[in-house]
Picture: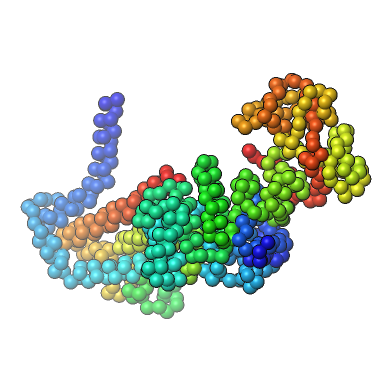
Amino acid sequence: MSSTLVELEHISKSYGSKLIIDDLSLTIHENEFVTLLGPSGCGKTTTLRIIGGFETPDSGRVLFEGRDITNTPPNHRNLNTVFQKYALFPNMTIAENIAFGLRISKKSKQYIDDKIKYALKLVNMEDFADRSVDSISGGQQQRVAIARAIVNEPKLLLLDEPLGALDLKLRQEMQYELIRLKNELGITFIYVTHDQEEALTMSDTVVVMNQGYIQQMGTPESIYNEPENAFVAAFIGDSNIIPGFMVQDKLVDILGVRFDCVDSGFGTNTPVDVVIRPEDVILGKPGEGRMDGRVTHIIFKGVHYEMEVMAGGFEWLVQSTVGHPVGEEVSISVDPFNIQIMNKPASEDEEAIKLDE
Amino acid sequence: MKKHSVLKKVYMALIILFLYAPILTLMVLSFNEGRTMGKWTGFSLHWYEDMFADEDIMDALKNTVIIALVSAVVSTVIGTLFCLALPRLNNKVRSVFLALNNIPLLNADIVTGLSLMLMFVAFGITLSMGTVILAHITFCIPYVVLSVRPKVRQLGMTHYEAALDLGATPWVAFFKVVLPELRSGIFSGFLMAFTMSVDDFIVTHFTRGAGINTLSTMIYGQVRIGIRPTVYALSTIVFVVVFILLIASNIISGKSATVKARRKAES
């Protein structure tokens, strides 16, 4: 990876008696797309605001290109923010909004005009320069907010749930736009969201947070395929989290049945949580798999069927392109590579949470 | 159905009649030729001429305008600053300050006036136009707060933060981004403070120095020595001015309300 751009060192922050961030350290590299992902109240937005300079940490340091900026006001930081509610200035036209930062840094009129044109083109809004903020849609306001931030050529762009207010179709389009923009501009993005799909789609690095702690950090693939604890497993996608114990290396006991797996180093006869993604559960004819069960629910989701299978006293969530009617006897088997072993939660923040979906 | 709607209209007409009949009477009599109260002797503008020629009245008018302008400007500045500071306070402190702000609104004018006078005298401050202005500032601030605070709440902190983020200093962010958004609230607060000041009799009465008259104290003084129709003319003008100011302030706040509604509908 390229050189370090931002370092957070042992950041803590609380509001009153409520601890928001606890001893958080994080390194962000140049030209990286980092997503802070977590449920509301996990500290992700506060972390972003500390980097942006809108909050001061109670303890710890923020380094930007090696320089301590912990107490530098936002207007002296070489970064820009795209706010959740866009925060476009309603008393100015689109072009004036975009020119705001450039006028403050006293750029020449020619430079500003060129930059406005360039930025509007970049976000496909060429014809909107003289329109008022009120006259454009939410998605367009979003684009203007991004244009307004990037014309200042920041080293770092902070994005606080920028797509949260858009409808699904537009959100997906904007995801591609953002990836394109990032590649064209070559600046570092720190992106805050509670949408795991968004995080997996766009990021180079995903930082999963809960209750002020980093739960896991890594590439989208590693976060999805190898969740380190029950919280991450449950928050990223659907999963079966089943209590079991490690019999020995590469052999796990799930609901009284032994499954081969690829994990080792958990010791012998250690209680663990086993994560199996619903798309990794293979259904077959009774007797053909590791254990037998009966289908209790089925719904059609478009790409696949989602079924619940009662087997070994556990309700397995299963996704498959082949549907099995309710009541049918099936067998369950899992490829050893698709069994992910996790230590039991050591603290409350590592536990799986129920999502309201 | 039809019968009902006729009844409704009659009812409304009666209410409006009762509310505005006294003022209409006053207005009509201000154009009366003679000086007898209940007798119409012909149309004339000479009471208006007399009024403009009357030095006492012109002096009082001048005082009223000066007092209203100065106290409205000062209370608008103080009230707006108060509103800007509120979001930065914690909930407990904020509710204490808001309660303190609301008490003068509910307090009887006579108590406000009397206590202000006592304080001025106790601290050896000679009653003058200055004390009247100070007094007016104190009771105008809450009205400014009432009309500016919703705007501040509606705006939130993000626009200010966005301006800082784009490199603006706190001053530039305030004057270029925050102030334009609060303008309508500040203006209607100013108008409200201005009308409240023009309107006031009791507090002015207690805090004015010798020889200082505003329109209201002057009219009250005239009532005791026998009222002249010049006062009707004056009152008519005062009413019309206040009426226009109120309509203006309604139009301004109404305008910003529709903008807000439109924004909401679009998002």
